[in-house]
Image (cartoon, rainbow over all chains, first blue to last red; front, side):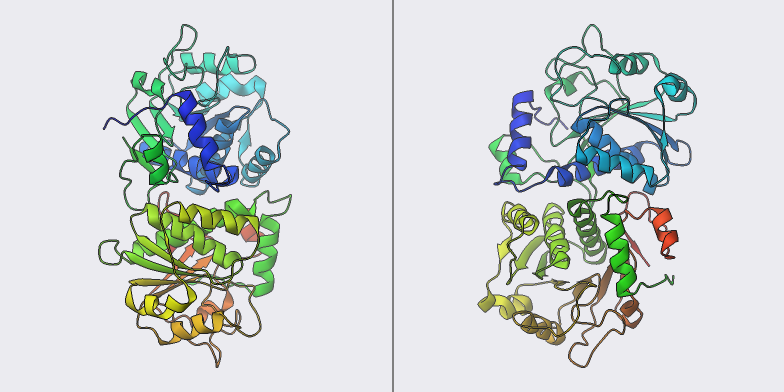
Length: 231
Length: 231
C-alpha cells in the first residue's frame, strides 16, 4: 500500500489542528493512543515469549513521550521493558509518564550501562528519540545513542521516523541506520520512502476523515479494534 | 472466572490513587483507555455489519466521558454512533470529547427524539449514564432514560455499572433492568454479582499489579494487545 507521505510542515499543521479548540484533543490523549499503537506494532512484530526484553530509548520531546507510553503498555502486555532516558525535561506530562512506568517496576538504565544493556540484555530496541520536528545536528547524549543504533545487530523499532534522519530526505551522512520496523504516526513522513526494513505500520487511530481530506492524506483500513495497521 | 468485587469506597480509593502524584495518571489518559475498552467490548459483542447503529446515552460525569470516548472509537471502528447528552456540564474535558465526536459527524439526538431513536434507529444501546459513584435517586432528565432502558427490547451495554443500580446491592425497586453486556472498569463493583446478562467484560488495562495487590483485587489475563477481556 502506498500512502501519501507528509512534509514536516504539513505534519506540524495536522498536529496543531488536532490539538486546537477545533480538534479538541489534549496531548495526553494523542500520546496515549500513539504510544499504544507503537506497543501494538511491537506486539505484532515480536512475540513476547521469544522477545520479551524491549529496551526503549527515550528522547527529550513528544517522541520520547510516545516511547514512555509504549513502555507502559508493553509491560501490561507481558514484555519486560527497560528505559534509557538520559535527558528528562522538567515537564509535568513526561514526569507522570515516567512515574507510571516506575510503578510497573520498569528497569531504568544509566548512562554508563547504556551500550552494554543495548547489546547484551535486549531483544528489541525502541528508537523513541526524535520525531518529525527534529532538525539540525544530533548532540550529546543522543549522539552516542544514534551511534549505537548504527552499530547494533539488535532489531530496532523506530517511532514515527528513524531518529536523526532528515524528515524529508531520509538517511544522512552521519545517520543512516535502518530500523527493522517503522511505526509512522498519523501518516508516514516523506523520509519513509527510504525505509528498507521489514515491516511498516501506521498508528494513531484518531484522525477524523475530514481532517485527512483537508490535508490530502489517507487513512487505511485498520482491522477490528486494532490501533496499528501494517501498510 | 470470579474476580473480587470492589465496594464503592475501595473503587474510589483506587481511582484517587491512580490520579495522585504517586499514580501519575491524568483523567484524560484513564478516560481514554476506559472508553477504548468499552468500544472494544462492543466490537467483540456486536458485529459491525449486523449492529452498526450504536446509541450512546451519556450522563453528566466521568461515566458519560467514558461513553463519549467509546463513541469516538466506535466511529473509527466503522460503527455509526449517535449520542444523547441531555445535561452537558461546563467542563473542559467533556466539551473536548464532544467536539471530537462532532468532528466525526456523530449524530446528536435531541430530547424529543430520544425514545423514538432508541427504539427505532438503534441496534445497540450504551448506558454511560451513571458510574460507581452514583447514589440517591435518579432525577430528570435521566429518569426518562432509565425508564426507557427498563422497557426497551434493544440490547444494552452498561459502562461500569448498570445506571441507577445500587453499587453494592444491585437492582432496586425503581431500577431493575438487566444489560446484555456489562463492561466493568478497573475491577467489577459489588453489584456485578447481580448481573444476569450474556457477557461480562473487564476494561481499563492500566492498573499496576502493585496497586491491585494493595487493594486486593485481581487483574485477569488479557489477550495480546486487547484492552478488554471477557470474565
